[in-house]
Amino acid sequence: SQAGASQAGAGPAGPQAPPGPPAGRREFAGLAVLALAALLMSLDLSVLYLALPRLSTSLHANNIQQLWIVDIYGFMTAGFLITMGSLGDRIGQRRLLLSGAALFGVVSVVAAFSDSFWMLFTARALMGVAAATVMPCGLGLISRMFTDPAQRGMAIASWMSCFMGGLLIGPVIGGVLLRFFWWGSVFLIGVPVMLLLLVTGPRLLPENRNPERGPLDPASVVLSLVGVLPVIYGLKELAKDGWHTLPVAALVVGLVAFASFLLRQRSLRDPMLDPSLFRNPVYATAVVFGLLGGGVQGGSSLMVTLHLQTVDGLSPLGTGLWQLPPTLGLVVGLMLGPGLAQKIRPAYVIAGGMAIAFAGYLVLTQVAASGGRPVLLLGFGIVLLGVGIPLGLVTGMAVSSVPPERVGSASAVMQTGSEFGVAFGIAALGSVATAVYRDKIDGGLPAGVPAGAARAARESVEGAVAA
Image (spheres, rainbow, N blue to C red):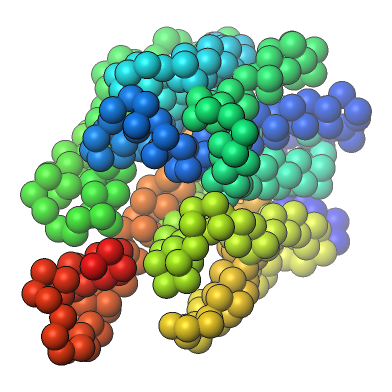
């Protein structure tokens, strides 16, 4: 049991700090503030869906502009993660987190009262930059506050539960607000939380920085942005429109730029991302698992959402409400993983979680076209449970296995990998589902269907419903 606890908290590679005293009331209060901020910032990725019709009418935004209002937040968050992680290691993670919270609060107010597309677009972009401080700085501060391996594992799992939960409850919160207030209200829900963080952060959160780190390398910042943003954009566009010149070109540009970024890090005395981290098997495993876990979660969520909206005919709010129960599987899994690793070898816990996720996919294969919602939600919940069990565990192990002065940048790379995984999962599973759908529908349309309706039906499920 003691050996299992050691493994779960630290991992076999990397510098090992001796366990410190158990965390007290101050540390848990700080964790609560960090978790609430993570929930609000991740919630902003999805809270806008229900507000789009109203704000589009108010701001006269066309379809393309609507997509950019939604997507720019996630693009900027993913693009700036590595930069913010490295910056936090240099200037202090508490300092950067509080600066990000202040920026997030101010531009949220700007977004709420925007009177043009460009005003809202700029505000959403800056909100994404501010949100990029949460993941690396949050994990870095938690690793500093919770030095006991068992407590650290549970703290990271709790923080991740709030971060993941915010993604799925966004449409629900947005739907409730829009019943009583104008569309700008969906942007104001984070302002009180950011004020709470700014007031309590200096008292509850310790500073965590390495004074020996030098300034950021500007070329590395540019290469990381050019490497991440086009790849995320290309994968999203492939998922929506299939193989076309622009998304493929974006993928090529992004991959070349990211390869150049990695090569440059090897030549710098003080790199943004230390390449030697990937020689740490615990950390490398965590990055790969984050990529795979993000793919499973992103692809599964896409399929479940499409089924509920197009097959069952639910509204976006109804879809969000029906997805809440399966989300509990993810939260339960995240909380179970570190505790199980105190009694069972972490490798067995990880393998067990993957087996559970596989079983969930087997359940999803049994979903019928009519009346299959209970089976769909059961299978989705099992998948999320299986993904959640190892996700929090390997994140805690990875954070504990890297040098303390590199925790911010190391955490940022793990989150960036997860963002890539979500985008890739949506693109890959979306492409497979589209191919299967078109194969099944060819020859399956009843006679007498107008040619235009038949073409729309062959394109996508949404086209068939609209036709």
